Image (cartoon, rainbow, N blue to C red; front, side, top):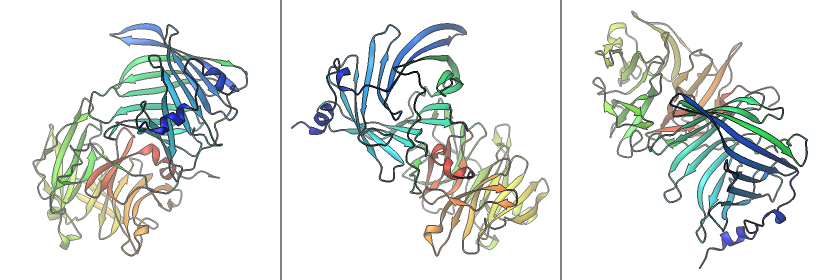
Length: 487
């Protein structure tokens, strides 16, 4: 028996060639002509790429769009149906140039309003999730992830970045399934008086491929496009992380910990263990052509408890478990012509102990010892000026460890474990104010440790239940950025 849901959605739209008479007359329509200067082998060719017509209702919500090729031939038409006052349609359908029947879409909003799923359905098939979209407090799309319809594995993501004036600054598409990259980044360089982009640079795999221009013609009304209806405010419910390079770095056969990146983001050093998490082996994995390759054990890496690559990639500091020494006997390794020097036992040479490090390029060292976070300076003759971080970072009831600090020492992320109250345990973020550190805010992600931000600024990477995982930073900005007045 045919699934009734596609038939229900089909009943909301008319036949593809006679749909105009069943769609509400739009308040506002824009026609966009996309032209590009294609850069190929240093030859610039200007060409019309696409024509698109968008229609909006009285709330500024898109209810229809049609896409045509440079020759004016129809390529795609989409209709959306809103059943309430929110920014997200309840149902939609679209046609391509070579189909007679529409492909239905069903929009399912999460209970807390943080995101919605888009389920697509081939004719006669059960709808399958193929996209999840997150909105910020202003109703703007900030992150999309795409799923294979059969396996539900994520194969791609799209990230949107806005400026302080609300304008879209950057949009980036990335593949996540290990196939040919074709990562695409759009950099907005010009907008019109209604804050719609009119010019952007298009990079494919970090190579400038297009200079994209858009000419916008307003129809029906010459008034500016209505402001978007405010969307749901992100809640404090957990944002679930995804395994980092699953099957290559995050594996089911072993546990992984202590991730840290080379400055270019193309090499990751981490630790791996089988049964004893206090006795791990350091590994390095390299990304080539957008794909993370099988990691290799480092020559000094046996018996590591945890470690961190310095922010400039020049040194690796790690410890071996020793409960009699505050948790760690510390070693230092330098990079040497692409290899590594022999480890220097800092504890034996200077008496310094600690674990869970963050080492900046200038030698500033944040680390953990006996349930506290400390700051010191690493020099050639040892570690100097040790001092614990003041409240509200270190607390009497919690154990604070695994710090990440930015190069300016303005933003701090760390893990807090409170044995008597699991609700107060988690990953916390704070920023420096005039009189010290602001009260830390717990990030809405599961408990974990060893946070590091990727050098490209896309992801927060950390350890959860023995796996290296990632969370797109765009989903955490509301918690990472200092609060603004009136928020």
